[in-house]
Length: 122
Image (cartoon, rainbow, N blue to C red; front, side, top):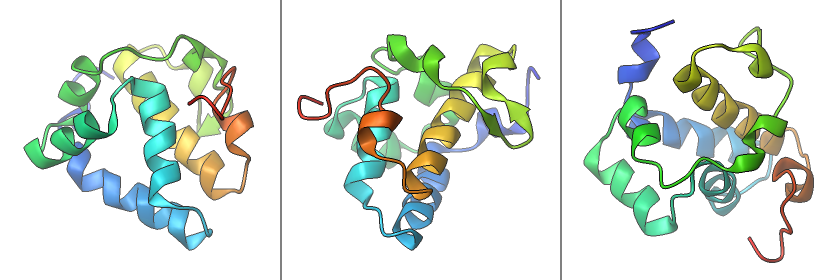
């Protein structure tokens, strides 16, 4: 999947779509931010800067402070692919993020979305 066009899509263009998806299901922007920061290691300021700078998804993940070590616990199907079987690391990270937002919108509790995380400390 090298060179897939999603890699050059700006994070700022998909972020509002994530928020809208969550809000349609009575979830909040803060919860979207929480799952994205859990996955990527960005803090709120870093997340806002990535949005303001218009970085593409490739850059967003390349500059991520640290992919959560429990990200490999994310499993299931998103966009017709099993996330745990995606070979391209960048595509897998993008699909991890999609999967987390999808789980949030489906009403899953944060404790189960943020695998291996004490949600009171996150």
